[in-house]
Length: 452
Image 1 (cartoon, rainbow, N blue to C red):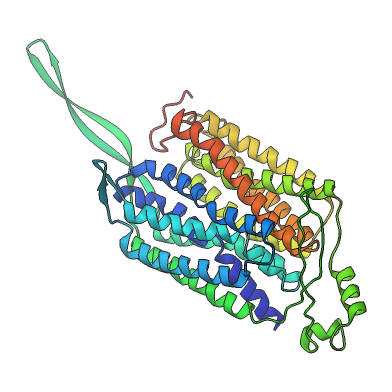
Image 2 (cartoon, rainbow, N blue to C red):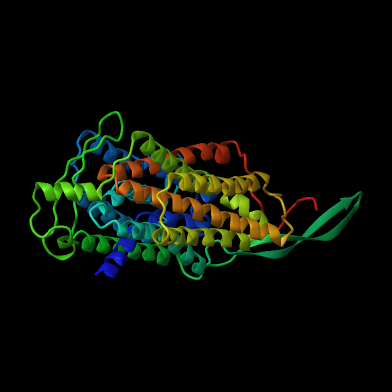
């Protein structure tokens, strides 16, 4: 039973960001067809930030009317919307229409908003729902959340999304000197996009299946025995209060806590065991840590991954993208085996992750001619740096969630809010630097114009 619950929690977590992650890894194929071409990433970025209206609404409702929103109902609605949006996207992704005299992929952009709304809102609904289950399943949920990035990346890798080769193109150039015209042959190495192994339709249908798996997993998780915790805490000076009731099953797993219907003393004892109070300064530090780590992982560094990796070639880029996606669930497994609630350790790991992120950012700034470009050491270091950056900060996020889970239900709501706020600020910071001011220069792996 425990193993089944772990699998369900993993599948449930996998549906949290799988749709948006699927859009990003499919971009190399989408930009070949859609009229926005390589402006499409900036459109997706803005749409995702607009979709933060979902978590904002849920957080405000928890603040002003705690207990009014039913998490189970919200989760059923948003996951069902995700399933329908993925299914429609499979068939309508290349539908275009004219707006203000310009052709736009209206169906793709509209459905992207609904997918982003689902994934952003999951940050403030999925985690609080996990409060109903035993604590050990929270880490499994984070493993599934990590797989929501890894599995689409592996599918896209098998599809051949973004795979290209360097081809020697021959041009004939006419040179005119006086009355004489001479032909000369010019050879140029250019990038040739290879055809995909299967279509975008099949890719989005696979994303639909993963969203369906998330919906089914939640259906069965919602019927698991629950342990509710009485809690009444003050997270901020605004005095956010949450009251709930103890529902301790008198058979099965819950019977280990009490022999029958809990009385007041049993409820008080359950509360004392299951909840931990933290001072305001400690909670503030944890939330700031979550927001900072989320800004780096979801906003700042992903925006420059191609700039930091492509100068070393397509192989280095795909290895960095795939292995860093693997580092996320692996870090969650490490957190399950070797958990640590030490804020000093989490702060140290954050500083280490920032060091790796600073190296990645420095290489992106140097693009298209970074350090060690002609050396295999350069390839190995940039791939390793991305893996360690993702792994260390993923561990920090998981343990921060475990700490807050032991505090209260509303603490996990604020975890999701801090995560979305950090991601929003990171994306808003990088968008003008990349799309408006052109601070970063892209590299062509086939034709580098760099001094030796």
